[in-house]
Image 1 (tube, rainbow, N blue to C red):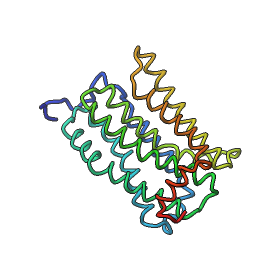
Image 2: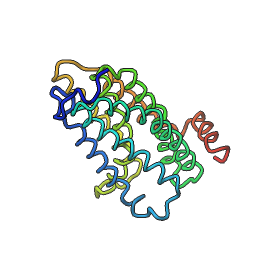
Image 3: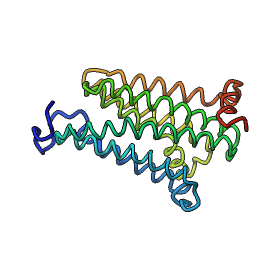
Image 4: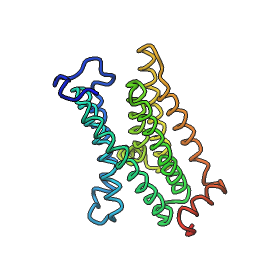
Length: 243
């Protein structure tokens, strides 16, 4: 296997997304904006779980900012090593912490029932889709076209919570449920833009259409779970029988 010493220090040519790190930085900026009022403004009063959750989510996006730079500069050994840390440590920690956050939200009843059910469902679904996307990216680690696209999908999956809150800065966006649906729609539109970009390159690769279909299905279902007995049974079990 080639080591980093065999690669040039300058950026590699023919990189799929040569500016990927800048797009991921935008994702961090949206996250900071979205949570500026609900988390950062009251950070001293937030429980430890919220801090751990925020650090893990920020860590994932930060990792994805570093990874494209390493790949572009041919530092593949370090790229793979950090990737393994992300898969074996960061990803499981995000799922476990996310589940605890979802459980706490259901127990606290700190939102209207319709909003609570929708958010809890989307969060729980993300905890299933997120590791699935990561695992797929690893399965296709030697196929740059698929690997990179599955990684991009993980970031898009994590964006709606921040987008939902960022939309409150728009004067006409004052309904949490409207903002949730709008953020899901914006995420799906981003995927459609990426699909159009692939089409212009001459081939549509499977990750974006699959992600668009899954995200759309979850967005639609989330609007009806509040009337579903199966969801109330599941959410009650998650909350430990306290719902």
